[in-house]
Image (cartoon, rainbow, N blue to C red; front, side, top):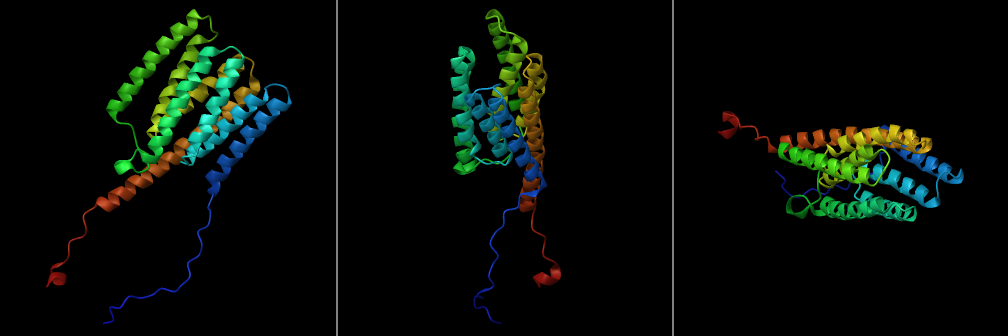
Length: 250
């Protein structure tokens, strides 16, 4: 029996990029959000900084759904631009809040790259019961604190502003850990922002967040599918090998 190593000279085909239907839909939504932001700018409904913020936000969501770590530098650009926008119009509290988002973004960038076992990249996971309880308590406490603060400052729709802010912070924290449940928070935020911006007569902005809602929903569905596939692969690897038959052992 020839035990010499065999050389496989059969050429292998180069890998091809497969986008798929979901990828095309997601890319279409990203382009739609970008076009809408550009339209708002050209129509005088938003400055160029706001347009950059909306476009970078759409690209950031797209990259997040694709599990691409480059969502973090794009997200850092997004919060930096929003900080300037809010500061220029005198919303110093919102501008300061962007610093918190920036710090969380830097932490998330590091965790996605090195937060796994033995400093490996993170994979999609589910929140534990303990983590869910902690995040819920923190979210409620933040909402109450921000609500009272905004109410004292005379802000409009102070409760909803406080709720969306606390939900966004919780969502970003969960996203940093690559938790599937982060999408629940993002979906809830978008569902609140859509009528809130309609109430403030910001119709195009409301439409933009409707697009973000579709993207967040796709993000949840795609992450859930990948999480289940990863769980199946892990289960298959951990299954014990089949026992050899008595005839094979003789």
